[in-house]
Image (cartoon, rainbow, N blue to C red; front, side):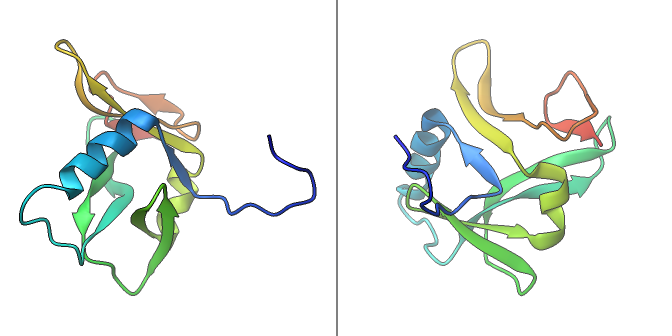
Length: 118
C-alpha cells in the first residue's frame, strides 16, 4: 500500500516479474560483462516504422540511468517519448517465447510484436 504524500521514483518502463527473472538469469550467466547495463529503447525500422531495443550495452553520455529491482538500466533520453509507460514481459511457453512489449504510446503495432508506429 502506498502512502499518499510520499515521493516514489518512477521509471520510464516497467518489467514484469517474468521479465525480471529472465534478465537476472541472463546477468548471472558465466562471462557476463558487469560493466554493461540493460538498454531499453527504440530504433528506426521494422514493418511499422520503429522497433524496440532491449539488450545489454555500455552506458553512453546521452543516457538516463534508472534501476528496476536491482537491474541497472539505461535509455537514451530522447527515447522516453516513445516508450514511457511501456511494460516488458517475458513469455517462456512453447508457443510464444521471448520478451513482449506492451506500449501505450503505440498507435499501430504489427504481428511480430516488436515493431510499432506512433
